[in-house]
Length: 155
Image 1 (tube, rainbow, N blue to C red):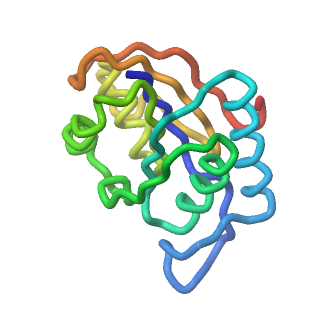
Image 2: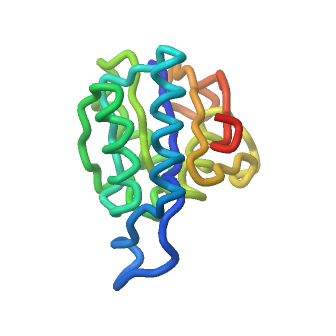
């Protein structure tokens, strides 16, 4: 399975609660660039799973709309996701050839690090709107290979 990991795009600095922070204008532009990049490079997730936080949901909606992907909000992707819990949740979507997760940092970096077998949980850092692709052979530590990791400013 190809696993695309996308950190949410830039969000406004404050809202009533952290989970209600919407994307900023810059964030909407970043999400559009990521969607265009995916389309131009034939990265077409059949399923996009997103954290229920507003900034991640908005990022995922922009990408899903552009790519024609199914979007599902998934509580396991909320801030504080643990890599092994995420791997367990991903077992339910192994039937798909390509899945995208839209989430938070340091959660995505920790998941990528675990799947790649990195000993340091902070070895991989996702800046806002960074996109990574992993080829997952097995949902275990070291069970994936990194295809690419591209920050938004290079997309």
